[in-house]
Image 1 (spheres, each protein chain N blue to C red):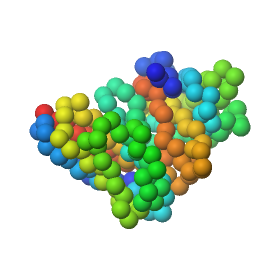
Image 2: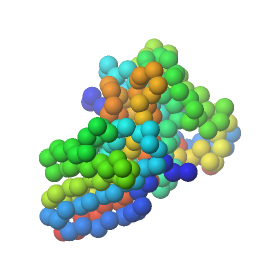
Image 3: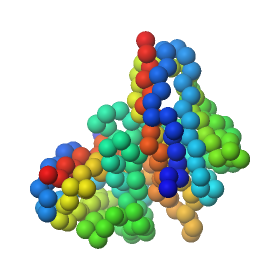
Length: 116
Length: 111
């Protein structure tokens, strides 16, 4: 039973346009959400995160939106650049009882391809 | 560099062999995580350390998997009597708080 779902295995976007990657989750205990970018043969690289007390977080070209009632988040990249071509993973965590960090639950990833 | 490092980067083992995978976290990071990533999947949580204490090992798939972090810095993931289904990329991450920073992973292939 997948608790974090990325329903689009791949997405192709023209350079300069907006890329929108979507993620849905089922566990209402999740209170922190992250996006990671992964190139082949490398580990995931942290991009941006959002706490459940917010509905938007922006960092340069990257913006993450959280809709708690729909249990949905999205990552917007604008403008898209060729170097953005990678696999993007959505991840979520729940505050560990007693404090401390928690293991992340990942989606299966979306392969973003930026076309020139 | 200042990032998380893992060794070896690639490991080929014959079925039944024991393997040991090493993780050097970012200096000062209290939390350390191990994940397993199968082909075409997202990383899946294996185990979590806070300093030298293993606080969660609920993701370890069997008792053939063992992890340690004796001095609260370097960690080793050991897999005994490897099986073909253990073939995956094993990722280590360290964290100062909420964000986790990943190493490049060790790709394990069991023949």
